[in-house]
Length: 232
Ligand code: 6GU
Image (tube, rainbow, N blue to C red; front, top):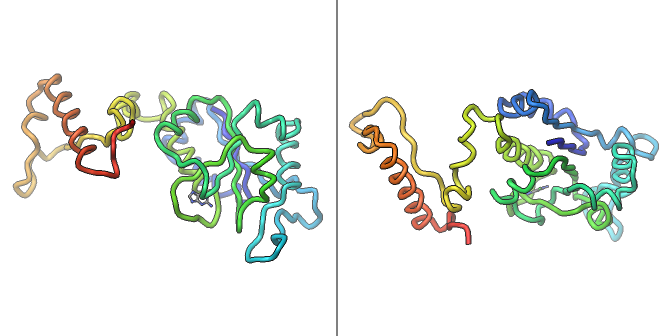
């Protein structure tokens, strides 16, 4: 996986790279690169955004600035670029991120994430340079950077070998292995604390029965919690 993040705040991603599973992914040869939109701006004084036509608050990321950044990076017209790789704009109104979407991205060799700032993107960026728009939920962030980190966190941990234990990303909340249901409850030592005990089945050593209990618990959670309905 090679992920390029176009941003006005590339240094934010220095911290992101120090996260354990991100470090692991990088050590395995995966790449996360923050590309500074300001570095290639065709405008004097390093300008990257401008006031919206028609008036209104805030600033809008310019189409010429994003075109220059994409061209410099990939050496092709960004209008064609989006046909050969996923160029994803991070917008509050985009396709909502879920486990299936994360899986699609994790299966891609290369992805590009575009972070808007201030009021967002000139619409022509979205229309002509992007294959899609992605949102991490129905609320508004001040910029796409934190959303990009959420996406990359979720995507990188799906790549084989980035988590401590290989199978830990398979049977987890909302995964196909659990039929889209939330994960079953976990317990560890001490087996009793303030009179709070652990389900006896987990201490029994019967692996098949433990697996059955977990599936049952997961299904129960899916039915009890309307926010965690199973996949259709
Ligand atoms: Cl991807 N960007 C911004 N700016 N706000 C968001 C978002 C993205 N997803 C939810 N809110």
